Length: 112
Image (cartoon, rainbow, N blue to C red; front, side):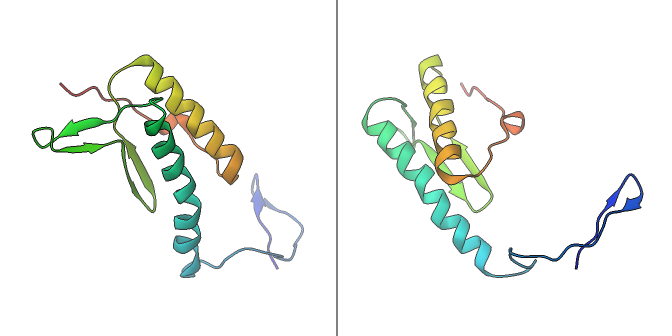
C-alpha cells in the first residue's frame, strides 16, 4: 500500500500495481534497449547528412555522440540546421520511446 503527502496531508492509500523496485538490476538493461533507438536515429541522420559530427585526433576520428546509461552528449558542427534537426530527432525519440526529454537541462557549448 502507498500513501503520499499533498500539502502535508496524506492521500488515501492505494496499492502498487506495476513498476520496479529501487535497486532492481533490470532498469539499466531496459534503458540500454530503449537508448539504442536514439543511437540508430542519430546514425541514420548522419548517413542522410541531416547532422554532421566533429573530427578530433588530427582528423583520424569522427564522433556525433557518446552515450551512457544516464547521459547523452552530442557533438555537432555549429550549424543552425544541424541543431534544428537534432531537436526533431529528439522529439521523434520521445514519441517512439515514451521517454520525456527535458530541454531545459540542455546546454550548447561552442568549442573553438
